[in-house]
Image 1 (tube, rainbow, N blue to C red):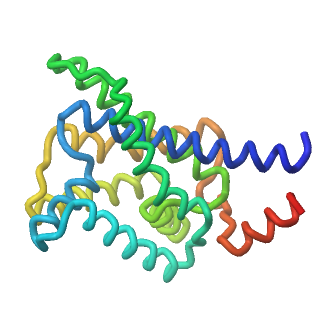
Image 2: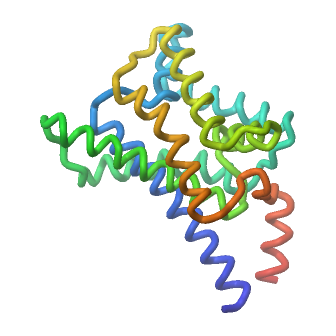
Length: 219
């Protein structure tokens, strides 16, 4: 396999990971057992400031990117594509409407856990391409690198912090919110262990490095 093909496959894997994140988000949404922890925070910020949930999400994302840069986390093309693609994928999945909605609590619980599993694997899968993380995942990685704690614990602490802050600001919390906050980090850590990868040694190219790399590959 030549370098051009390998590079195209890497970008395809990145988009597959981002699509899985979007699919997981919609599954969690369709389960209707509570907003995700970050969406609780977005809702809380919206209620407190009067801006929309979307504006709260974008504003918080930009803030976290600035924190990531300050802490030394590389901002790569994957960071930008994360910003742009997940929302578009979510809109596409909602438009196609292929995830059935049922009243059964058991079905909704299974859908919730499946969504968490998809989101966690999608996060792992796009991160290991080394093209930069989304704002929140980048924050998770840099904090993991700077501490002695495993990624699962750091992820859970961040999710629970977002949940608690959102709840204090008036965001709506459901049982699914708590399950998501606790389970996401566990699943993510399992995937890194299964594939024998260490998030602390995972390197990402920043945008400048990625552009130079692509020029070398595609000439």
